[in-house]
Length: 165
Image (tube, rainbow, N blue to C red):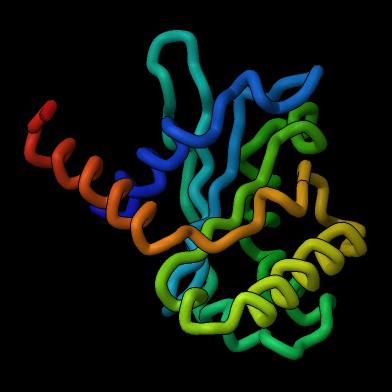
């Protein structure tokens, strides 16, 4: 439960539905890259509520094991998440629905150079994958700093405790 709220808190503070360019999608995908795997969360901006969760999926094995791997291997590993998303997001929104990959503590164990290699390979591999249909920007693939992770975690924990301070 805290993981979902962590992602939701990040979404509320960092991802603006109006920042999706000239054409905006009501859908956004955030992948929580953890030390045991990657979890995709699909959200929809609605008129009745700020956000609605539209589904989640997971692939086991952390992205850190792909350091030194080719772009195709990383894309193949993540494609089940996007296959899931294709079934949940209407096709007219695929090309304009943004993807964010936000890694946490496990990725911080790697050097900055290794992290950048992995993200570059992920970006390249997904863009080359013919069945990948979503909007991907290299700047949306990153590792959250420890202090930012703590901040979002604290906000999520306060939300769980119904503490507005």
